[in-house]
Length: 81
Image 1: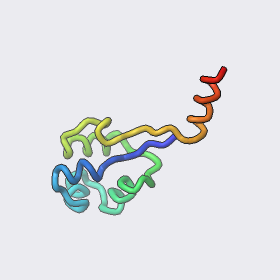
Image 2: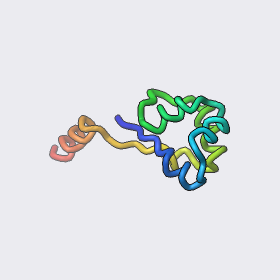
Image 3: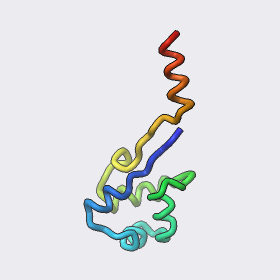
């Protein structure tokens, strides 16, 4: 399972720097970087709420699910049956 966090696009649309964004959602710039680079293992709902409030977007605008190879293989095997 791969959940991708697409913050770059939303930040660019709003012409907002990582530092400004971090201050606005009350997390460190280093943690914003972790989110942007796909290294986050989890996101608190309070953080997700703050992200959506500041960027004026829906969770689906920044979160994307991409099946990993195991999911794709299982789906292909199920389709063959």
